[in-house]
Image (cartoon, rainbow, N blue to C red; front, side):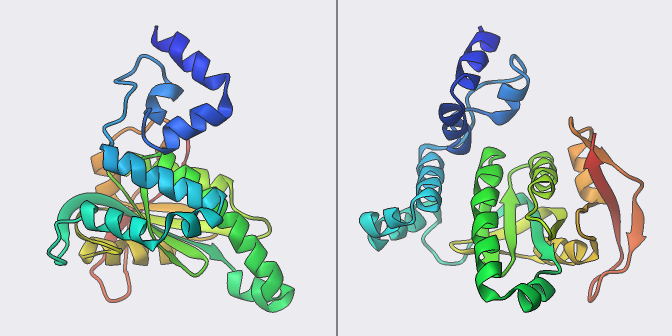
Amino acid sequence: MAARLADLLKRDPYLMSSAVETGLVRREWLESPGSGEPVSTATPMEVLERWLERSVEQRPSTLAKLGLSTIQILSDTSEDGTGEGVPARLAVAFTDLEGFTRFTATEGDEVASRLLAEHYKMVGPVVRSRGGRIVKRLGDGFLLTFPEPEAAVLACLELVSLQPAPLRLRAGVHVGEVVVMPEDVVGHVVNVAARVAECAKGGEVLATGDVRDTAGGVRGAVFGRARRRSLKGLEPVLVCRVSRG
């Protein structure tokens, strides 16, 4: 039954991508029918938020039609209302495009702007399909969060495969306790993830030893040997390269 349902969804790529992105169906189940539950654990509010993000990315005019009040309502209901943030254990990832500054200088602002716009459209669906959240854009990069380190690693590997030529994407992932704010996520784990991303080369995904140990075996990913690295302003951290398996 599971295999038949997965096959039906795969016959309609648009329906399948919509169901996965919005959190109605688990991507892992589609990739391996029969393993685990097909329905995701996303709450109705999370499904609504993902649908809204997807709609705005595909049709920017949607934001104007819905109005700012819709965004504000979603923001207010997703937090505790105190403005102090909510503690949570999450996987945090940073990405950026190696050489983007040089590319802008040689190709011009207009070309660079178009490249970024296309890149943004690629990132959203990948992150949402893994249950993640785009916390904010950071120029040519992103601050992302995921409920599990496995999802963060697989999403980053997929983003590397979709990097906008001629530039190469790099990413760093860490996991641990953070404080989730309405429009940000803060904490030591965030700082470590940012520094790990800075250590990565273009086309490379680096993860901390904590990510490797917490995730265990990840289907589709291989963790390399962990090496201790000195991070600017932080204590040394075990870091390993992640590649497709």
